Image: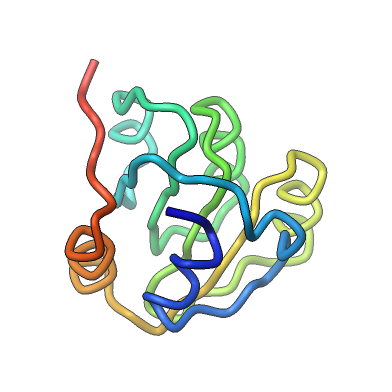
Length: 116
């Protein structure tokens, strides 16, 4: 699945990184706890979260994620956006709640990863 397909499925808006819309995403992870995300080991993943702080971008970078989707209409500040652009991580925002967003992506064929 591509980031563009995720955008469509979740009725999301790009915050930054629209130039990476054709990047492939293999798995998804939904969490507001970055420690749980660090236990999740799959490359080329998308992170769905309602947490809006710089640690989200740093965690996504460490886990080789190419996209972060902020649920519940959350929008990061300009410092987070700049950091994501430097790290080539696309940021999207969706009005969907975490459970619904994860369910829609799963129903469309995007699976979860495996724990370490």
